[in-house]
Image (cartoon, rainbow, N blue to C red; front, side, top):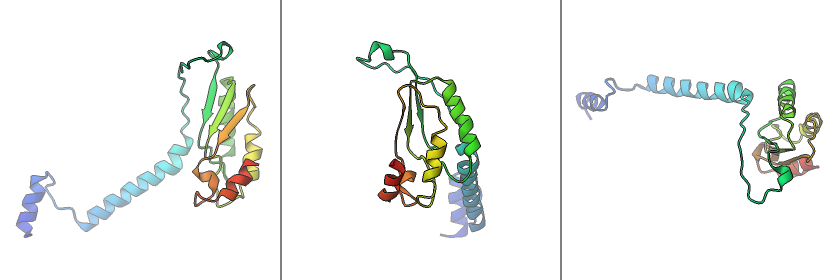
Length: 155
């Protein structure tokens, strides 16, 4: 394709100028940097409390209007304990009847955070019906497939 036909094609698609290799990689780099910044500095500290009415058929009357709290993605690791403790206080302030933790209790290279998870989770006040949970992919180690790590965490 000639330079003139490339320019005509670029104009046809509203690009005006051709994307150079330098501009392409600068754009890719900026996108990656933005994604990493969001994933490491913003998302881990974004707590959302959502209250929903959930009509449930045949729900026992003594459970009507009670609060269930669902927590996800704690990612307990070498940092962030004070932040999680403050989140636990928010949860406790809701006076839930039950707390459900849905995965990703920890983040680590292996089983090194298991005792830490137990210690920190024990600081969460247990509501009347208890705390139950299920594992997420990070609870199975760095390759997300190491069942022995999840088994130790379950203990």
